View 1 (cartoon, rainbow, N blue to C red):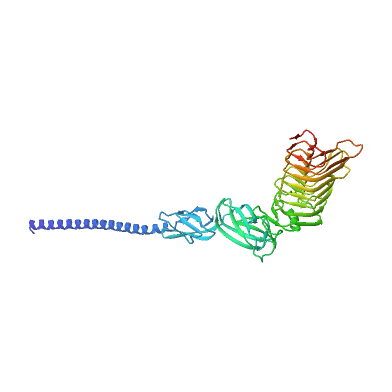
View 2: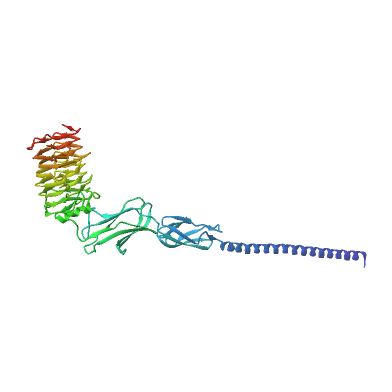
Amino acid sequence: MSEIAVYDNINNNLMMQQTAAKSFMEVVVEMKRRNVLKGLVLTVICAVILGSFIPSVMAASPKLSKKTLTLYVGKSKTLKVTGSRKKVTWKSSNKKIASVKSGKVTGVKAGKATIYAKTAGKTLTCKVTVKNNDVTAKSVSFTTADGGEFIRGKSTAVLKYTMPSKASLVQIDILTATGSVLLSKKFNNIPAKVRQEFKWSPGAAQSAGSYRAKITAGKKAVYSDYLILKEKGDFSGGAGTKASPYQISTLDELKKMSKFSSSCFVLVNDIDFNYKSCSAIFGEENAFSGTLDGKGFSIRNFYGTNSLFGFIGENGQINSLTLDNCTVTGENAAVFADNNSGMITACKMTNCVVSGVHQATLYVYKNSGTILDCSIVKGTAAVTGSGYNNYWECASGFANENNEGGQIRNCKADINCSATAKNFPCSSTIVGINYAVVESCEGNGSLTVTKGNNYGGQAHMGGIVGCNRGIVRSCDYAGDSTSDIVGWNDGGTVI
């Protein structure tokens, strides 16, 4: 083999080796490239897997702050979702019971509802119970609409009350005396501090008896006083108010005034006692504080040992009434009333007689009110007893004592007065002892006094006033006695 052939052979081998080496390196590089790609593929696959797995894990973690909730009507509480950044959609199963907005739940009406919170593909729930407010009713009254008697088939009862705060539901029950529910009504959303009224008109078939009202708001209940339902009224008509006074037409109705001492009355007929008596209609503890309009009618033939009306309080008023042929006997006797702190106007007494052991007067024993424009026709007053020591014993027409605050004005008396006593007998047509005001009065009739022998003291007759310690103004006496206007002026004023 020539040198040239050897060289070529060697060169070829080198080239083959280089080619082989290059191929090997390319394979290595290719393998590395493939491994990198495989890694990238694995990384991508892991990322995809993790990307789909992580949200699914997060979707299982959202929670609602409460699973159950109790609310009162009108009140609110807020629910919160944790564990999710996704948007939350809120919904109520019954908006009439509980509403929800951005998690704020508000009680609308008593009942139950479910609140739904939907987020990240998951729905959360909270069960809500709504209750009515607990409110105690105030200023409760249960009376008739006209203030009078409660008569079945005629009258209407009115329940009045005030809620100090808003009440979502108020239930009113009318109860019998045994507690049975006769009538029940419900009212929604009663406002605070607004006077409320509920009316009840029992029919003619409703049983007479005692009834009261129950007002319930939530768990709070309040009861009214009892109102007595009657089959018929105590009077011939009226409601006992100024606008509608009770109408008196019989003796029994007159006596029933004692049970309604602050009511208003009117006579609609003459009343005859037929020479019988009765206890004084009003006592000291239930003095008359209402009004009685006699309308010119007469009360006749009252015979007794006490006055007819007893005690007339500061607000009591009796006017335009005639007492005819009435007779009262007693120790400190009076026909019209024992005490008057109110007003007697335009009344008249005819043919009346009063006889007392110590005191005797036709109108009132003690007066601290007003007697105005009244008259006496053919009256008789007599003190006949043995007498007290050191005290005036008077026979008079309008008041034995006209005390502080008393006013007797424009009155006229045609009366015969006589007084017999140990120490201080006194007779006068208008007032026995005056501590206040007697004005523009006229007296007529005979006056006599008799003092026991061998006793000290004084006896006085006064045409208008027996003993004056107050004011006597513009009065006149035209009787058959020689008396002055005042029998004894003991520091008073006579004008």
